[in-house]
Image (cartoon, rainbow, N blue to C red; front, top):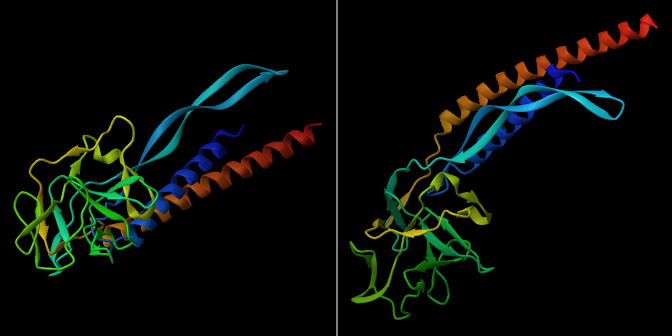
Length: 249
């Protein structure tokens, strides 16, 4: 096996993952509360070649292959006032809990909510926002909505529900699911934030920095070109070796 060609191909695969990360960040830069993806690279020990005698592998040749790892950045975005009664921005730790239409639960920092026809507090896509005791429903007779320092939602002079927030011991290991939501893996349970800080009539912006992502795109292009050259050189060398050995016969 041509080790140089194998390493070049592995590098191109890793860079493709990085390109997907950058593209998703740029596409989601305007989404409230969006947490950008980050890519990191490391060397992974692997068998890059095997020596066989008949059907038996007699020796393996280990080598270091480039590998990409993706994580989620939890750096907070900037909160901005909107004046909309159903907008909420989280400060510090915490995520809103969302009940999806299939019954599953997801978590988000996007507090751009609205009221549906049944006066339930929902996301823009219609998923229910859950409070401390389940879905939050406001009174049909209306009244001004506000939230107090304890996270209690008030409509007029009547308490409606408590807008609960949840945190995770390892938030960077949350995984993305549909509709811009996050879900924890096993061993990473949701923990209620006891004293949540929520800014009413505000939205937290994403933590994506478009200029930084464009710089990453330029760096990626150069790295991709370098890996492609390694692949081309290895391919050319392999071709010449095959031609030389063929002429010896």
